[in-house]
Image (cartoon, rainbow, N blue to C red; front, top):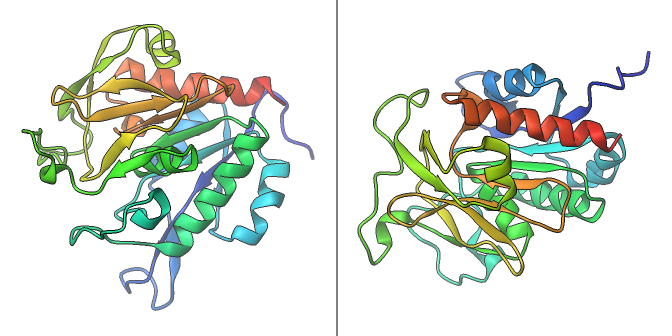
Length: 243
């Protein structure tokens, strides 16, 4: 039976784990609220194993791509940084796959939504660069790895008027959660910074030349504000429009 044409198929990238907390063998994982947020917004979420050879096949099937976060970092060599911070940890296979499928989706103008580490991956795919460790910045920064639960706000962000993000959420300030030690330094040529933390750290990016290409540093899948819900609704709507 074919999919309901009103419910687009959204690929959700999975994390890869090797610890034995679930299995003695390597396993994939994704937090339930990523999937729930996509389904609640009207999409059909499907997990994507990290197999770069299958990326072209995935993009032939998908209406949209959600790049999730995870407790790892992107290899700095991929954005031209020759030094590896002692705080940087890598998952090479996952990063290779996410870069491959993100690049293919960009070429085909398939909507992309990057969350936390997914925003950072998206920035690199768009030709941008990253800060490897926020506390190493030469200015005072917020505690971006908030000590309180992730389903509560950690700080606020300022949304730039005139951006697609602002059009979606309809406000210039949002309270967001925060769970990252890296951040986007430069979103890439021709790309737009759409949100900033009070300390100046980039919290959101977008690519005006694409139908829907947005990354946010916070975790809207927890839906702690109306703006978070609107983000998922706009993403799924853009995916449905292109079917």
